[in-house]
Amino acid sequence: MSEKIKAWGQELGFQAVAISAPQLAHAEKRLLEWLSRGYHGEMHYMASHGVKRSRPNELVPGTVSVISVRLDYLPPDARDSEEVLANTDKAFISRYALGRDYHKTLRNRLQKLADKIQESIGPFGYRVFTDSAPAMEVELASQAGLGWRGKHSLLLSREHGSWFFLGEIFTDLPLPSDPAQSSHCGTCTRCIEVCPTQAIIAPYQVDARRCISYLTIELKGSIPQELRPLMGNRIYGCDDCQLTCPWNRHAQSSMEKDFMVRHGLDAPDLVTLFSWSEETFLAKTAGSAIHRIGHERWLRNIAVALGNAPPSEAALQALNQRRDHPSEVVREHVAWALAQHGQSCDDWPHSEDWRDT
Image 1: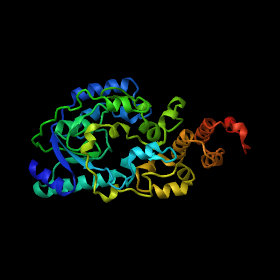
Image 2: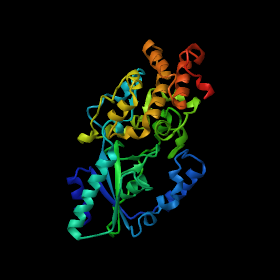
Image 3: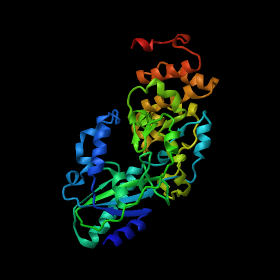
Image 4: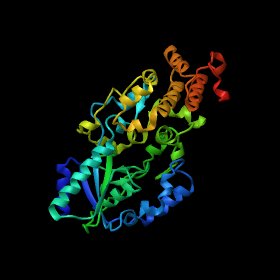
């Protein structure tokens, strides 16, 4: 049955399928220590589920095996990431978010795999997860032998790098486990050194409160001022630790249509994105992972990038047009961006003073 499951998974388009009998006691200790230090920031859901995250049998009673899958996402048609990062008039969006939201694609495919199993053996207990429940997917995939946890905390594969999504089926089927892989990071510390905000505070330890992915996606309020200049033109996520990783020389591009670039978001102009109305934002990001941050955080993030961009008449005009935005968060970040270019709030005629709201 284990071999059939792997064959069915590959027929469904997964690049790899592996199985583990989850034993996460050691990972649980690290998780609790990470939470106790507050590294999760405002991601309160990380703590609210307690140890269910590290105890699959408590999350899904009866679980004895976890089927982990890998699905590559790197779009072959995307502009070179390094070129986009170097062009500070452009916006950089994490490569996983350039196409459609992966959750639906991955979940539907996992469900088809579960249906195949059920057709073969009859009803069985299972639940499908795609980053949608408190599951330690990197630990589970590592135990199953899909790779090892890199020093940046992502899963790494010698043959495929790290540009892939993970998903799981928790099941009550007593399936044989696959052997785990050993780590192959060696003495390399490129991911730690390249992190723009030094969020990787030690090997395998990330302080999310400093991570650009957290700042641009999870954080709802103001981005700490000391971190704003370090964000450059990254407006949604950050791929620097993956871009520098030597193992990603072996990464495979995805042929999934859902992950292809949409609306030119692989190298868009900051000024153009900042001009999007809320209606345009919702329409352009429908079905995308970007959609969930909402228009307010979208504008907040782009304001920071415009503050980091070279001064130009177009950038200043775009920022000034948002100076009286209804959102206090947007106004604050616009004011900061203008200050980066030598303008102050007093330099503009206001319909209201944002500092008094």
